[in-house]
Image (cartoon, rainbow, N blue to C red; front, side, top):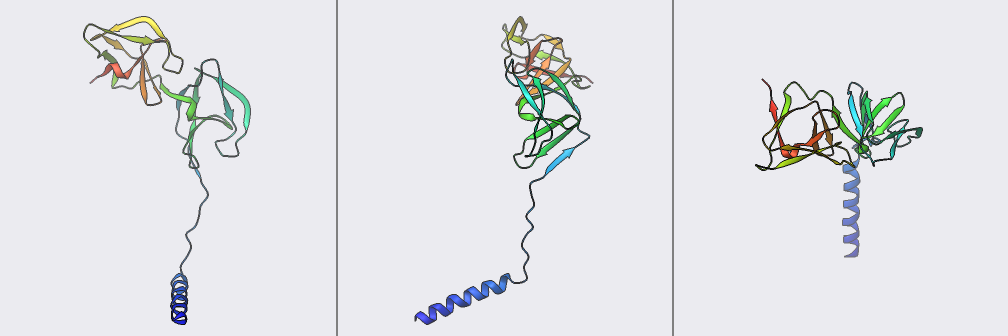
Length: 185
């Protein structure tokens, strides 16, 4: 009986070895990055008011500090992006061998687009919404309020996290949560 069980186990082992003979092992590839050199735009540094973020020499895991820092609220142009597949974080190239992490940025555009040129406050009838000094962390409400139903021209947009903000000129920003966008034809 023991010999039969051992023979069966040995046969299964040989059969498994025979089935694997001639098969190839899949190639294992190192994590890579995807760089988009033609991706350009403007960002705002969105960190902690009064503090700065580091600029790195590359987006790779072996990156090193350049010795440069960008203060919270600084507008910076980028000329390329890199999505690091190790951790899925997007990096922005802001100069030769100068990269910043998307974790500390907010997307912005000085050209909202040809379709969106104004917004209308969509809140509670008879009430107003706050206008903020910045869409970034540490924002403060201004004394100015916008009444429900009023329409305002837009000059820029910024995406901070999952929220869109629209600029009414200068340091005057409103959240997308209390407005609707007007499209031009």
